[in-house]
Image (tube, rainbow, N blue to C red):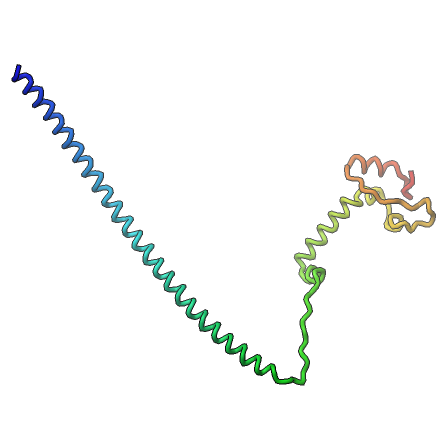
Length: 174
């Protein structure tokens, strides 16, 4: 009985040893794979650290040149103030700001957009009346008789425009 127990214990111990050996081999393989990844990451990290250092150096140089420029600008302003403190014979002209209408009118792209939007708004508000063939004099209330004066009301649906246009004669009367 003792021998059976010893044989069983020896078999269990051998199984545990074999399993431990295979786990150690798998762990070593994973460590080797991670070591190559670690080397790659360290290389990338070093490159990023170098980039960060160069960026900080550039920022420092920019701040130094900006400080020197500010100092030079302040000195130039001081000399300009002392020079302008002397009375001059020529009066200074102030530049007026352009009105929004001037800005739009002077820019062809903005003017084209404005014209397109203006025409679209006229189509929305006066579209039915214009389709009906009514002129600007009648819309403005400048007709020859009071009965010819027409109040402009927008007609937005195509079927209503067609019905309205078909029910009027050449002078715009029903």
